[in-house]
Image (tube, protein in one colour):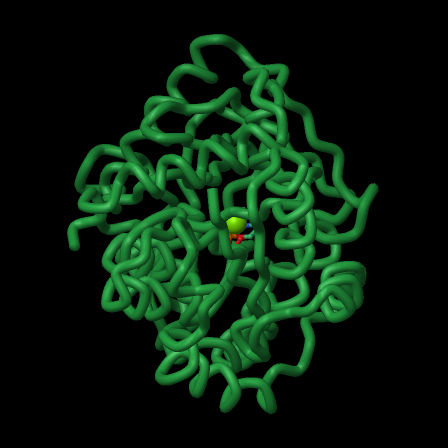
Length: 339
Ligand SMILES: Nc1ncnc2c1ncn2[C@@H]1O[C@H](COP(=O)(O)OP(=O)(O)O)[C@@H](O)[C@H]1O
Ligand SMILES: [Mg+2]
């Protein structure tokens, strides 16, 4: 297959995107596919740029991407359509995370170009990016979610509706950026201010103690459940991208019934948002055994050690085969994204 990996861009998760891209590129090449790479805030990467950008580790803080924003705007509005690497690709492999690139804008541009791309279409991508709308759809299809309300957030409302501690997070952001576990009323305003830096819409959410579980969906089929035990209290940015900062078990050592229930909810959540190709659904399970769905990831991390590839591995699907299957799902599903 002629595959072009689209990566980078001007999102807070630029570095994470390169980390995914680097592994996807070598995996696809190991299967003899003809692979090119495009930085959505740069252009086609030649061999040297590929080595430099894709080889660097994800830092402990998200990069400053303001200056790249203009470059990305020009790429999406003008240059992308002209690039031979894009026009001649059979499939565009989206190794991007965050912002407009994960949230439907890029997907809409690619629909206009008429080139198949991995993952979900514009509508589903936008829904998955918006935690508020996602949770409304989950709830309406019977997938349980933590209690929540949107800002403005007052301490009184928190005490009545959620209790303490509680979570404040931007509605449309990822990688735990801008998220705070708030223990007392005095810390509430600062948490809201921090979240507002990333999104005008801020969510106040019930804190669910207990275990963190995640379920990948490939095609329409759930993968084995995984458990994450972060060394920090939350699965935050540092824990997510520093090797050794969390312990991940696939398949999770949980009761078969609980695993089946989680897998069922994951597929329900995937369908509720009309996701396609693949996705990863995040859950918390309280000490009482109650399941709560936190969110859906329409373009989950795809380094070899990321959660989704680990889930696939537990199902006997090795990383190169996984990358290829996701590409094939995209090629065979040209009309299946609601477009
Ligand atoms: N309501 C909650 N209760 C407990 N932990 C939470 C809650 N919301 C978020 N977290 C923690 O923060 C992490 C990131 O939150 P999540 O909603 O998945 O956003 P994202 O991954 O898009 O940043 C979760 O994996 C979990 O560890
Ligand atoms: Mg998450």
